[in-house]
Length: 221
Image (cartoon, rainbow, N blue to C red; front, side):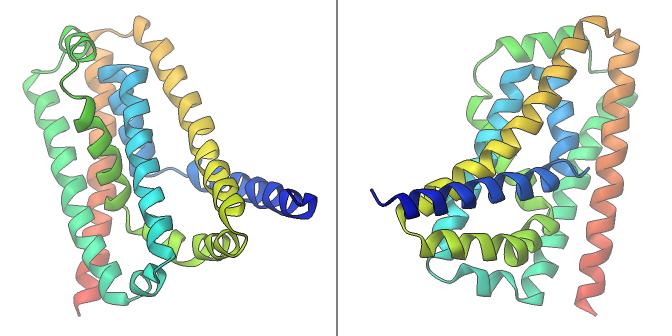
């Protein structure tokens, strides 16, 4: 294989990693849900979220090959994503806050959830849904992401693989660190602290969701 192509792919992968890492480290819905799901279901729950996120971005990269970026740049698309995504986040927040208020969530219930397998695909779908719920995720891909993706598509299969692996490695590195930190701290949690943490995450999701809904409503004017 041409050494020039390998070097170009390596540079593309490194750029994708560094740029994606800055985006992954920014506070947002996915970070909040990762913390919540790790507390409730352990590290595997966080990994399922990441898998859903990665599958969504793989589909997006395929879509870019067929001109999806033009569709994402339309103002109406941003408005719809803000309204639908905001509604989804508000619903998630409500579910958490109601459970905390009624004290129907507990550490024992969380351990039982972690030990049960049926939520496997639900976690993957939730990872994709949480990513889609953030209109800034689509905006990032329609601006910064589309430039990197275009370079990758222009570099052929090796460039596409380098870009995708570099981007997802950044997400995995950051969120695996978050998940491990939260998981390690679970043994020191009491039910009161546990409910307090879920309540804080629920409140943050509510604020984020309300902000997205407000942005969507402005887009309708």
